[in-house]
Length: 147
Image (tube, rainbow, N blue to C red; front, side):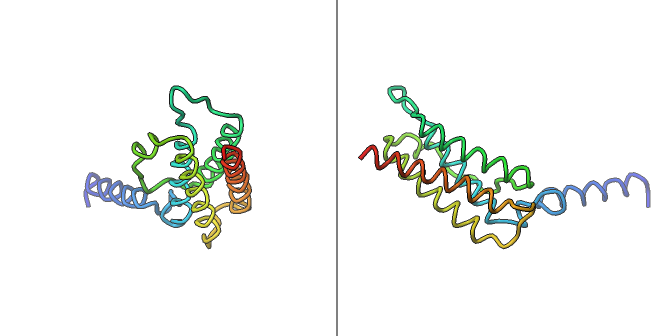
């Protein structure tokens, strides 16, 4: 086998492994974490996208920090978002509708993480659940405050 042919086959195989999330990426090995990551990203966008007349509240910032902490935990464990979701229409909604949708997405992310059987790094599930619960509680309390 020629050197060029061997290199082509090797890089082709590596591309297949990396592209499918095989050895190097855990996203496809842990689909519930990937779905939760997509939901959290969308929830964060919904909370973070205040209209020009709105000011982001300290409680909203606290929820965003908790979501970011969960996203960091998943990224450190090698989980990548494999699903893309349409953001634009939902982000343009009124604040209360955006927050209700964010709350729904956070609840879905909690279910996804709870349902995941594997744990690519020790304690990941517990840490992710803790941050998500805090974010969910903050957004829920803020919605109750808004009436």
